[in-house]
Image (cartoon, rainbow, N blue to C red; front, side, top):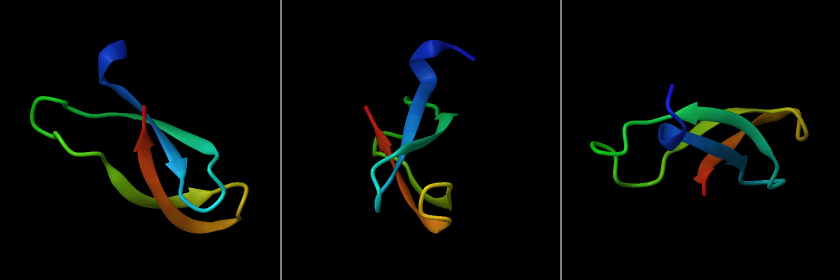
Length: 51
């Protein structure tokens, strides 16, 4: 996995970075958003891609 394809996913509720993932930046131009489990909030919240 190359470094330029790695992204960080941040919780929209508590703003903590919980996950790291990769994406193909040539095909996906917009920011990634998905629902994942937040360890701080202890529930499923929306996670958005950060810089």
